Structure formats: structure tokens, C-alpha cells
Length: 142
Ligand code: SF4
Image 1 (cartoon, protein in one colour):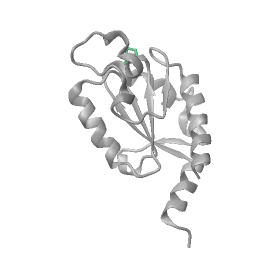
Image 2 (tube, rainbow, N blue to C red):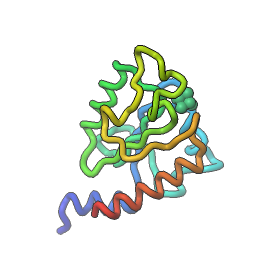
Image 3 (cartoon, helix red, strand yellow):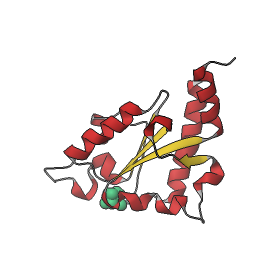
């Protein structure tokens, strides 16, 4: 009988289960990807309602110091191997909120971000390209 890790790895390679942690207009970054035109489920990416089932954590929008603590708790609930994708300029540099006293400037200072997707907001093509790289990354982990 395959180990629990092998079962999970097999599932990851077939499909990526995504948990979303979006703040502010960051939510708009995913809407085109889940809509009928782009339809991420066609490519094996499914949104899950709980981080305990998620392989990938999408974080979008600026993070305040309060929301960052919640994002860390979400991340801690995910099983290994887990991947964090930072969507948009706000996760990379603070974006247009770069000089706010209450927002995080660079998410990877606080969470292990595997990949950033640039843009304000990122184009759906960029999200898909990142997900292809995530599939490859997970295969390499195996
Ligand atoms: S990167 Fe742009 S679209 Fe995304 S949360 Fe920041 S301001 Fe909004």
C-alpha cells in the first residue's frame, strides 16, 4: 500500500488544490481565472474551502500586520509539501501602499513565498504560467 505522502504527491501531480487568502482588490486578481473564459479547473486547479486540504496558498492584496498573522495561521494548517504564491505588486513590494505604516512591504520576509506573480493585478496568463511552474516544482520535489 502506498504511503500517505506518496498518495498526496500523486494527487498533487494530477490536480492542485488551492486555498485563497485575498485582501482588498487582491480578490479581483483571481476572478478572471475562475470564470468561464479561463476556467482554471480545466487545468487541474481546484479551489478548496480549507487550508488542510490545500497544496497551494494564493496570497493576494496588501497584507496588514493583523491579516499577516491570520495568513501565517492558514499556512501552518497546510500539510507538506506546500507552496505559497504571492499575487500582485502588493505582495512583492507593498505596491501602491508601499509607504503605508500598516502594510507588509515584502511577504517573503514573513512567509516562504515560492513564487511571485507580478502585475497590478496580474494577468490570467501570468497566473497560469506560474501554475505550470508549480506543477513542475512539485514533480521535482517528488
Ligand atoms: S497588486 Fe494592484 S490589484 Fe493587486 S491588491 Fe495590490 S493594488 Fe490591488
